[in-house]
Image (cartoon, rainbow, N blue to C red):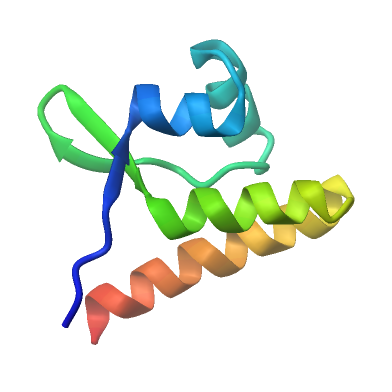
Length: 83
């Protein structure tokens, strides 16, 4: 089984081209997945989730379509843990 890389906040924000506050605003609006807790003071995002959201933006998807994608990505994350 191949382990997926986790992007820490600076990497994820740079990949999205957003500031810290803009990332958290997008999370609140459902336009970005919630981070994975890595420790007491550390969070990150699976690289594939950031890539999928960026690809959707590049493809010109609407905010509603991206919200649906974010829900799908977070549901897949939960399923992977349960399996």
